Image (tube, rainbow, N blue to C red; front, side, top):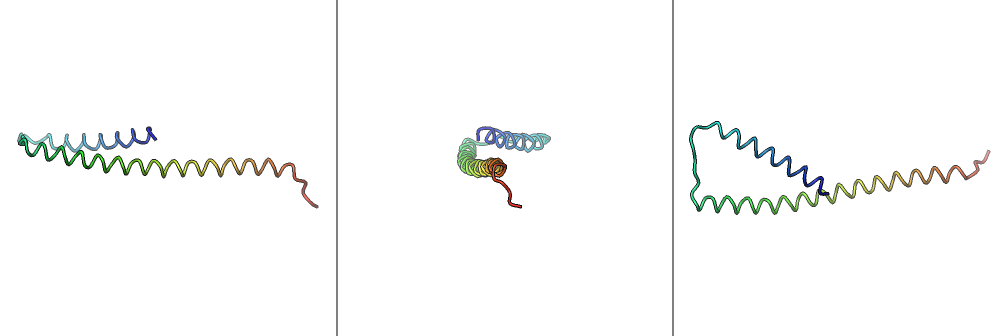
Length: 90
């Protein structure tokens, strides 16, 4: 789960880097006022909370899918082992 969170964070970081670097080609320097900085920070915090919830739910879904596949695989192997010992009728 932590590995998935790290990879989601990495993807988001790379996307933000490209967005910021594309805007940095502008020669115009824009400075935010204190109120705009506070608003931007609160928006980022709110979105971060939402993203964490979404990422956690995706991790839970992925874990369940992986777990179910592992159980199916183990069950198939055990079934084959049991079938070896059952005599076949001719």
